Image (cartoon, rainbow, N blue to C red; front, side):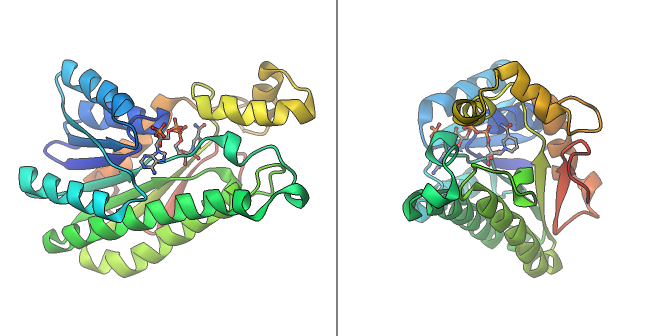
Length: 262
Ligand SMILES: NC(=O)c1ccc[n+]([C@@H]2O[C@H](COP(=O)([O-])OP(=O)(O)OC[C@H]3O[C@@H](n4cnc5c(N)ncnc54)[C@H](OP(=O)(O)O)[C@@H]3O)[C@@H](O)[C@H]2O)c1
């Protein structure tokens, strides 16, 4: 589905970035993987290459405009184009979860908002500047149901997710006329990831729940009575990045398995 597509993934050493990288590679994409620390990105790239795919690993801080720009220019120099830009950047939940809003300091509140919104903006803006000349491309990001639900003890995380979804709509309004689609994915919690374990640990102190009870309580809110797998999320990412989704832009795909109505 992605044969010969050139894809850049930010935060590729993380759970979602890594799963999307493996899925994109299986579908024939040529990958340029980036992340704040090289080791985890390199590990994903090696896995992709040993499975017969194409992947290059580079250390790029997605909050550093110059670093994102220099890397993207190197992708263009090597491959002549960029077709897919995927933002899978995430910061540790320990920095933003578990504290009631009335006790939260302003810096801790702002951290997710500035990190998520700014990194997505920089990645998207620079990708769009290169995609415009081809009149095609897909810019993608990942959010959570915190964007649309009042979930306690999550500080500025909900506002950060809402800002990303708003940016997806605005970017699309400006870029779709030039052939560039902008779409997000909003997956349900994925128990395989350290991110969910961190979210659990932040709340466990207050709720007294075990890891199993925490998963069951989240799963009970879905229609399927279970949570999502990385593979399920990555399959949708492949479709959304492919030309088969040419009719979709300016939207965030609801992968909450029924726990959040459209
Ligand atoms: N996991 C879930 O259940 C789930 C569900 C729905 C949505 N999401 C969302 O999906 C996104 C990714 O989640 P995840 O579970 O994959 O998190 P993760 O495993 O912690 O991965 C996040 C990656 O982002 C990298 N990163 C952080 N700051 C960066 C920066 N400034 N520049 C470049 N890379 C940076 C991290 O690198 P370092 O570790 O080297 O800092 C890490 O590799 C988040 O927005 C999260 O909210 C997750």
